[in-house]
Length: 483
Image (cartoon, rainbow, N blue to C red; front, side):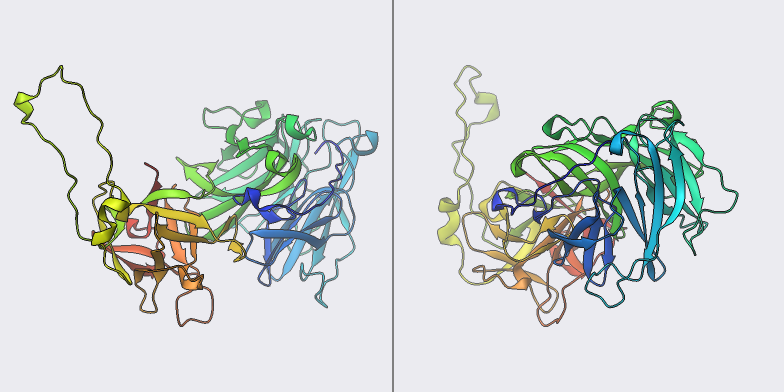
């Protein structure tokens, strides 16, 4: 982050429902943290955002003293460690800076336990050396239990420092190690034996003209060297692209990773400018995919008509209706005149078959996709029902009808005749790390809490049901295909 930015908050219209809604305006957001059922992220300037509906609707209200820029937050045991740059990055016209840490038992400013400890300095820059003490990112190594943070900007090197995970203080005698150049706002993560350094490349703080994008390298040791996918060292300016632009939004910066479940992850960042929100800098929460061992931003679910295709065999979800043949004038292939004009055939329409469909609740099954109306599922945002990290809840109906995919108390699925708005008809659709989707009802009828385990599941080639999520089987996974 190269200069301080002040954003004016205003309410968001419903025009941009594929993004976070409410007041998601923030610059340099920290990694998202969960605390007592709510989600928090902190930004430059001292404040931050809170989501009380699972991570979809965001508003101001998070508190962080000290001002400064580009914080990060990490839960260690039963406390939260917050780190931030007090100055630096050209703030106030110079590159003198220092990085501070604080502890708190909770992130909820309304809690009686909410009290930040006095800040402790863990790094600094004198304004002349080739490093800015700003933009810190934390990593608690799940293998060794050691605590690290990276920091720095384009002004010089990105550096790595070790902290004591019990006190947050800098490990005695630790010397900062240079690990990258040509980026800023770095973050460290660990996955499957690799350490990843995520850095923000390009220019910031120029609204719709900002060129921020997120790149990464990886290493077998936390100390590096961090190489990209073609072997370029990040100390020489290397980096594989993770995300640059989105749906009418530019300037992706300040990466954060949040693990939702096994095989389901999201990444947070800001868009320097969202065209749908007046060019403001806003919070973005995107699916995080992993392809050949490299992180990549996934795509948000968009309202539309889809084939819901089982990864198990490739069959399509459909309501159980009688098969209606499509009329066709056919000729023996050996008698076809190659010079005869070709006439395009129309696909079967709902009006062609709807009179043959029985009323009432219908069974749901899997079969070959044949471009039939009972296989065309319309996925739509349901407003006012909240959501989860990155997305709202959706309703799923047969296109052109009110037949609605519904969970039953017996852990089965049916298509009810109409949409009532009941939680059993609201669906959470998340992209898994391999690019497939998991589809799960918000609530199982008869249960008192929201469902976090049972997903749409192919128990056989033609039999869908609800069963516990298992990332290691294709029975749990689905593809959303547009035709």
